[in-house]
Image 1 (cartoon, one colour):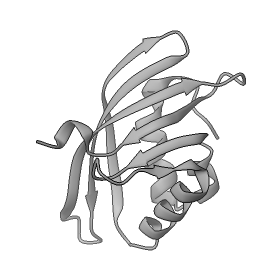
Image 2 (cartoon, helix red, strand yellow; image 1 turned 90 degrees about the horizontal axis):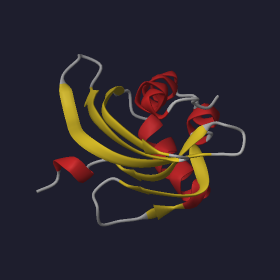
Image 3 (cartoon, one colour; image 1 turned 135 degrees about the horizontal axis):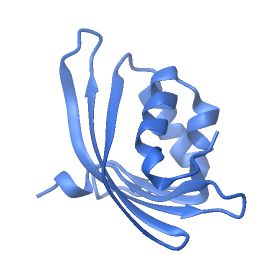
Length: 123
């Protein structure tokens, strides 16, 4: 369920979100991960992240994600992801440019440590 290369994270997250596979998407997050959607509110730990993503998954919107860049140093990577969300008719209802810090675990799989969904698109 994880990713073997940090460049795979964007499309893997997209696939799991669009499938509404909560277990698979949560496997992409470190136990101590931090998520922010707006750069103000920090959603900390898997339980809080799961609650936030579960609420998003009740909506019919689909995600489209693309890895724009990936910088890796050992077991840490910084990924920039361009994303947008479409409603059931295909109209873009949200979009952003995320900055994500990933770490490779002892199992060789990469996980989010910091997921800032709008970092690179905020003024």
